[in-house]
Image (tube, rainbow, N blue to C red; front, side, top):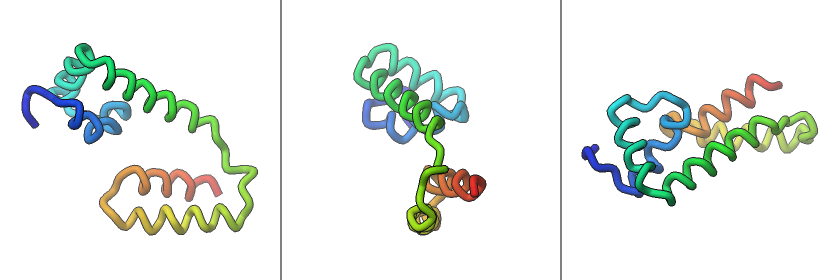
Length: 96
């Protein structure tokens, strides 16, 4: 990736940045971009808040049929390259 990040580059780096696994050079470039781009900063802050709020959600009240349908859906998506759906599947699979 170029030394200068653009707004459209942020989405590709978002998960790894928030997860703390972004390469140090990319992290520095992203943080430089965020310092000058209030729109992207707001976007990342909203993403972080969404993650924090979702951690409070628990599937305890979910009907078994819906849980199975959701797991099937996530499992079908996890056949794609590892990403969000794979991590969500693994999280749900462990909460049975």
